[in-house]
Length: 180
Image (cartoon, rainbow, N blue to C red; front, side, top):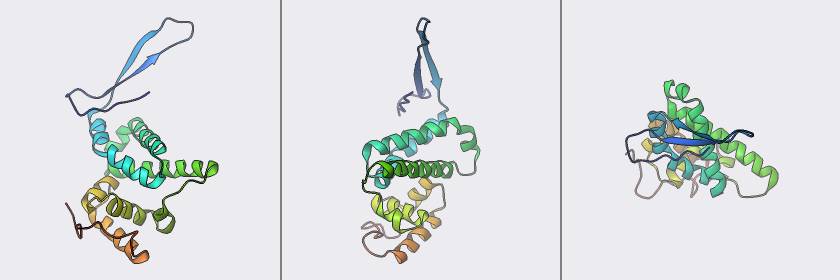
């Protein structure tokens, strides 16, 4: 199944799964109607998830596969996700788990580069560094993506800068204290 999310129109996103049953005439496609909230969540987060995953995985194709898997898994548990106090936090944990799984499977088969920041810092600090210093998100944007409060991102970034000063944790130019 492939789901394409579009920004146009007011109808919910739809996906078609052609059904072919051996020995029977072809069946009409099943039309899936995705929840509007899920579609909006995906449109809001998918690009940043993809950029973040590319930073972690260092492979465009694998990054695309991971983000598609995250969004596909989210739709299967969407009622639980949307009823949680922080849906973005649920999605972020799932993204992190699938990235870790992809990296474990890749390490077994090849010696491609792996995100150095996550090898040197705890996960929360490394995530803050990537989002703020590499992807140039504000603290507020990074917090929204991770499903945490902005002060938590600021704190993680400060701890990372103390543990690993220099170019790895340098804040983007002109963004000192940016909260927008």
